[in-house]
Image 1 (cartoon, rainbow, N blue to C red):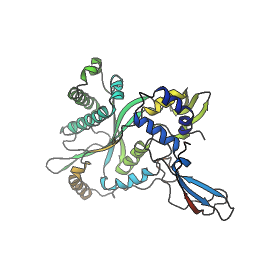
Image 2: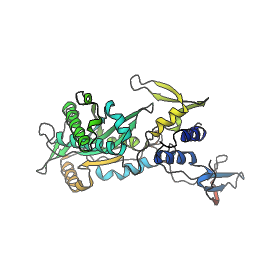
Image 3: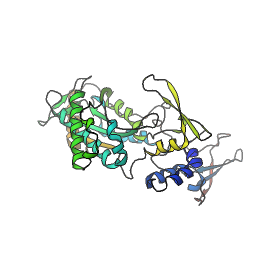
Image 4: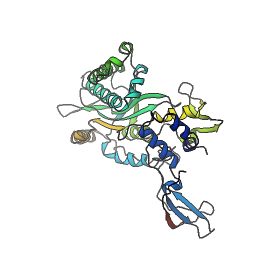
Length: 367
């Protein structure tokens, strides 16, 4: 099966040579890690089957968060860790999208603009929810950054899972309607103002096309069911990389073909681009080193966990239905919601358990 690593190994050297002075260290590291993932370069273990006398080499993963072959085991672990955040209420899924006019600036100032995108979106939502015409209290929110479309184009946006209600200053819980949280238009206006103020403070405001402040900004808000369903819905957004290997179809004559689902027609389509363009598109979604792409606000922020406990107690006292729980995804669920087991390795030929013969030291050779 064709992998992103194959494209990087074959066309990566020419790409690195052409953009040697402009390639970010984080991009260079991501390419190297993906190329070396699960190869002899990183070392591993040698196993032996006593039944059919076969040997199997198992190499280490690179553990880079942008690698398509790493991180698939983490979704269910994350889901279980969120158990203490669940409330027995409806939740909403809200997406804040950065306008097209601001994307070149974000591409050149990723850490600053991504942080500002998080902060402006969270502050706008918390501010509007305090209005007694909507909630009149503090929401609980978990947010995750996404920067790509299905065709790997640059499209920064933040997804929020938001509680369907808030905790008031007087210690009461005010529930939202099951199908409505806040109006999208005033939320977009506040979001736009917060982002504009942040750009002024960062001395980046003069670099922005003035027309962007006159247009309507896009925010989408929709209900997503109870807490367990909401967190399970968000999990793939956290551990998904820009493009998984199973979407790759062909690498031929310097051209890469991959499949994607058209958002308008819901049909599967193919995109063919040069290998250089494919590498460029993939690397523009590599996050700055140490950047935190999952953040918690309002009642879900660490400083507000005591208030979250109070809210849960109030809701539990008034609820007749059992609290939702985060169960592991079924085996039929697509990755990354399916979590691999820790069962011993078995021989691919006869199915018998493999015996560990020896560790394999990392090599100095490139794959």
